[in-house]
Image 1 (cartoon, rainbow, N blue to C red):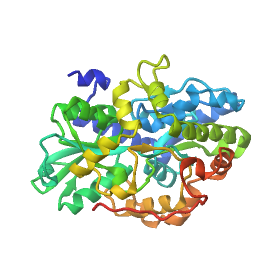
Image 2: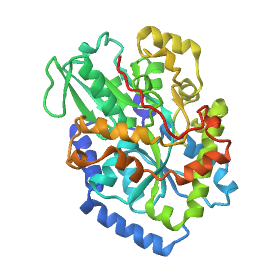
Image 3: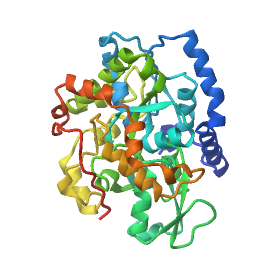
Length: 405
């Protein structure tokens, strides 16, 4: 069972995880971002018409960006595009984005809130990249949530939907959470870990579980080192996780270019919904593009709906809201304002490590309209047939549904 080979060799030490967290915290601070922003200004001056440069993590959340590249949808819009750059950690992708090495990325939606209002980073959310697509996965011998007491669970970052949903699940089970020290029987220790490092840590029982994007949950199932306890989409209906983020200056100074970029990504999402087996082939490691290191059967378990699996998950409790008819991962690009508002509200009551004073005074409605620029995605959606192309009513409003039980 070559867990480390599958996930590219982790460094799961406490000091390594702390270094990554501190690095990202520094990048998302005014002082830490300044040198990178200066580098970006120089690059922009030297190359005002920079091509599309995509940065991504090898998770299924990145599928629309990779499908758009593979299917030459950017070229069809008349754009020059480079091969997408794969990064191992959120700190790496943020550093590359802030310095201008890449200009179209997918980021955890709460991370964009932290970056814009915690450090004044000049970036905007232009679309959702996907919906659902994450799970809480635990060791096979975990029978009830109380069994997690006294153990450690990994999250991809403090500012993540994963952290929000996990804390809600733990709190309802009567478990508290800590970030330092040794947890007692009524506590769970939360640690930040890169997605690719989580599976080896679970396989070696350094942690009792993790909550993260696919396909690492499916991989744990297939390797029989973990089982899905709960889908995040079964707690927050049709929630976004990763969103398409671009430089605010591009949106202001290159509107035609920005529109074409978003057009290609929206087209990719619409195509992916109707071509899931083909999407598996695109993302699989045997594709000559080598977008991800993941095997076909792992990706298929995530991307291709299975009524048989859904029935099994309903029996185990991984799916409790069967009437929601959630898919393991789905794709629709419109960034509903109600989601951003709900996200800000939840973050205010979620434990996040580090500087978070800005959350206290952040108005959810203001954030929904200031953080997100939906001009381009609205036009792009209409160009592919409207919201109906994504199985949604023709409206840009909705009511959020969040329920642990």
